[in-house]
Image (cartoon, rainbow, N blue to C red):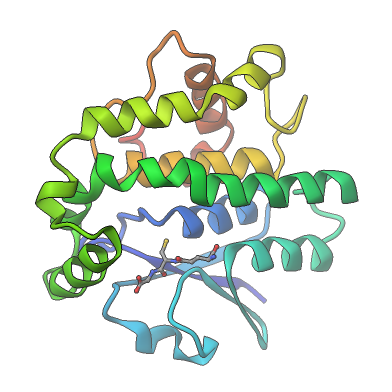
Length: 228
Ligand SMILES: N[C@@H](CCC(=O)N[C@@H](CS)C(=O)NCC(=O)O)C(=O)O
């Protein structure tokens, strides 16, 4: 039974930008699980109403319906235990959970200021009012004001990456010698930027950039050619 991933898209049904959906897609690729994608616009919540909640990603696997990228990662790891592992053991699973929380809050707080206007412009026309209303409420400012100083937010992102940078100067992956779900969390978050905006957010002499090139290459089959 093929797994279906319901994933947020822009007006172009092949343009995917949601960091949490990327985490799930990369987890499926990592575990070499065949799957198909169902693109969803923000205002098409009826497409995944069977999940009984309003956020993506959602996957269906036979009769199973699962939402939330972390819950999905744990489900895939338990159900497809013999496929390549997202967590080498319980200790790395606990570390990955903490890292995922840090990426989703501390690191991600720098990202809307980098890309919010670019993202707005790539949305389906029918999504734009919904996106503006919900994001302006959340950010406490208009998209134009919040998105007016992307350089400041790029600097904030790069500063926030200090500990990650230190780890990646001595090892190839956050998982050590091979990628694990921590690498997927960070790559999924960078793909939020790269799929929404052409802005450069890492300097080429940054060890994090070297890691980014490495994981882009590792997961290349899932990543658009436009992202290099
Ligand atoms: N903790 C959830 C967060 C899911 C989430 O916030 N999804 C966003 C896209 S990144 C969404 O579906 N937003 C729909 C909306 O705002 O209406 C996860 O990791 O899956």
